[in-house]
Image (spheres, rainbow, N blue to C red):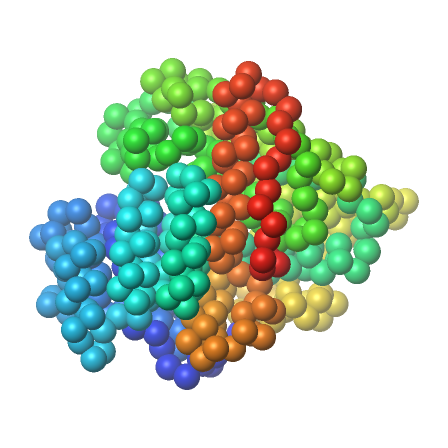
Length: 400
């Protein structure tokens, strides 16, 4: 169980690029990183494209005015001159800026935590992965839902054979908040998400389904896609060529089949984020609206609901427990869990502790690479007329 005691010698000096007053994700990063004040300390930031608004915001969250910078380049240069300069930076900016900021951060000798999808192409990710290895730095990706510890319970049960051979994989991440074009016109955060120049080659496949795809990899690290078929739609026509709805059918190397539904136009839906894994003996299902519960259905027996923090759960699951049974955890705890693992990874990298890195389950740059690869394969299928395509892999060097 986690209780805030230090996992590393001292908090890492941390900064943010983006994540300011108008950001949809900045507060999630800060609540995650600062939940354990033994892991990170926010000391600097280039929080906003508007320098004055960014400075005002930074001061209001407790950052020294002199360390609230007008842009990331200035911040990297000035912080490098300080004995107490930043060691790690989080990138919470629109997709199209990730690559250049991440590259600049690594070249400045910083570890990086970056929003997803990581970049536009796998070639860009491979370039940055090589640079990170050269600089001996960590690049983490904020798949913010993946810190929900019941996902680790699913992983452990599947590994032990509790559900038998995997036959079907049902993935869904949908909501209805873009069912009209209202937000496209008035929300700055939505406008860039439907602009291919800034968002990249997809909307909901990148913005939503990459979360769920990574979570499926975390739960089933040995299950590989052999081929897929993607059918994507732009129900709000002005969003074309980017999709606001997509269906993906998958065939896996072990003979299992699967499908992903991702959508921002599921009208009336507040939270359609579910994962169901069907095996030959039993099924497991997790739903984001009830993150502390896991449905376990054994063929021929009454359905069970496994509850977070209970002693019958796997130790890998309970190791990330924070509040104890009867006390509700949620998304902020999930972010805190992955940020703590980012800190542990950074500390291990700096100490040359490869054993810790090899055994730590967290969304690293390889997870970001696979997310971009997922998007590329889906877009390739859809753009060829929604046809089956062989899933193009690169052999992984790090097990998720």
